[in-house]
Length: 161
View (cartoon, one colour):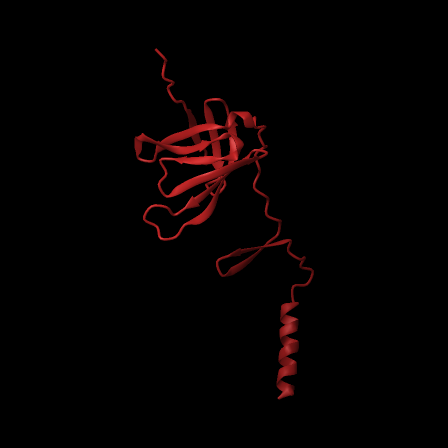
């Protein structure tokens, strides 16, 4: 029995090493169940430069039209001291927020309403532009070029008579 296995193993080893002069591939890409060897390493996705954020501009009510209903505005309220709240979001209740360089982290309890389970969720946004009236962000789980624009919602102050 060993007489059969030994030649089979030698034949297999020779077949695997038959690429004379072949250089070792630099990287491997796995697609589905297939493995593809690539001659050059994959290039990293270019990262946009970070933006300086004036954190004093962030507190306020930031809204955008609801998808499909332009008259309904939804978003979040960033309060001073890191407290937060949702605006017209029934299943997502923002509790707090913080800023790390150009990244806005919104911490929420998700699953309110008819859901049986409530869980913690953090929404991560890369800030692309911030002014006193507009906040343009890229949600990290969105397509590379996707940017959402929020506008500062101002409250009309009542005049005293």
